[in-house]
Image 1 (tube, rainbow, N blue to C red):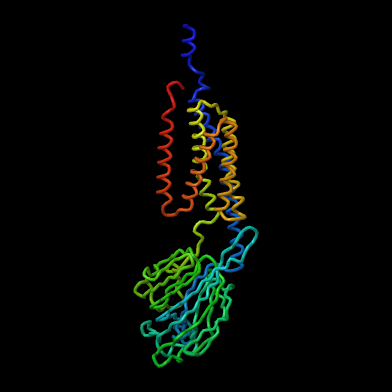
Image 2: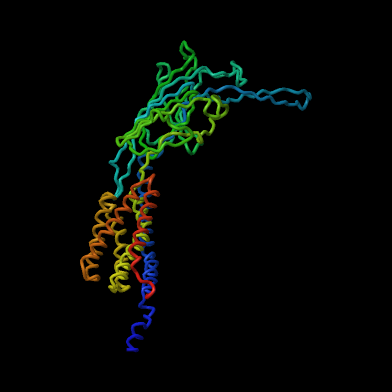
Amino acid sequence: MENSENQEHQPTNFFQSTTAKLIMVGILTLVLLIPLNFVQELIFERSERKKEVVNEVTELWGTDVHFYGPTLRIPYKTYTETSVVDAKTKQVQIQKTTYIDYAYFFPEQLKNKSDIKKNTSLKRGLYNNVVFTANMNFDGYFVKPNFEKLEIKNEDILWNKAVIVVKTTNLKSIKSDLNIKLNNQTFVFESKAQDDKFYGELETNNFDYNLVNADGKINFNFSMLYNGSNSVKFIPVGKTTTINIDSDWESPSFEGSFAANTDSKTITEKGFHADWKVLHINRPFAQEHLEKMPNLNEFLFGVKLIETVDEYQQNERASKYGFLVIGLTFLIFFLIQSISKISIHIFQYSMIGLALIMFYTLLISITEHSSFTLAYIIATISVIVMIVLYSFSILKNRKFPLFIGASLTALYTFIFVIIQLENYALLVGSIGLFLILGAVMYFSRKIDWKNN
């Protein structure tokens, strides 16, 4: 009798205790972070490969479209005087040397209307490269420059050698004839060599500024058709600059020094419309400049055409929840093991963990040939079915495997919702984790830790 009581109260071997099993499961969870990290590196590698391909295609098709101009350039004479002493007579003579400098004048009014159409036909290998064609129309007018303000005499001004200058990126991707109409006279833009590594330069042939109309203005009008990608931006050189952009792109990002008008800005699934109006008082630079056009890139504004979350970003975000999925799945099996007294070997935990990691390799490989949503559904069903069928052989009944299947379905659904959300991802994730913690606390209350 005494012996049987001693046997009943004989302490369990530590390595067979619940505490030891919990420690081993925890260590296994940490070990599985190694293959999970390999999967994340694979996602990063595939993402970098896509960027390389996209860069190759956009370099051929066309990159960012940034526009600086038009600007009126008028040459004028400057003089330097040098004193020269005659060696024989010792008389001082004044030699006068003439140089040509340039004055640059921005337009009084600049208006632009741009229509941007996305092009999804470019494909290289697995990757679709979303680029666009931009049809841009410009009009406005210059007023007669005030050279007195610049302390330049009227007789030194070469009015008959004025030109219109436009600086723009992506010269190779302009797909239209470049004609500019100045008060009903047509001039042709020609590409000019210059030192600016960011912009290419276009300028007209010389014209006589005296073609001003009765109002003392030179009206201009011209159009440009671009192949481009990523962004369309402008520098507000007009004393009043008005920009209107329409596009069928559904995910714009408005960037730069000036915000789009909130009253007229619209974004829908079919595209967007945006307006900007910038006055001279809104920008800290003058309407006229001497010697050269200033660098005003810091005042660029416009729209960046983006993919809100591409497939590799979604895969990367999904993989970041890998530790959570493995840990919670192991916790479910551990709670079932502890409550039902069913023995689950550490090798069986390993097989379940590897199946969970295979989810991410399935996800990225299927995503590259279809959409992320379809890939997520296929990978989720495949992994859940595999784990549920394996659980039938481990747990020897139907109740627990079905519960595991329902739990994993809820977990993967929860993660998918978080991945799709942008503004509320943190809020929904925090609420979800709080509820999961509450459920774990509820089910773990039946475990008798004193005898383990």
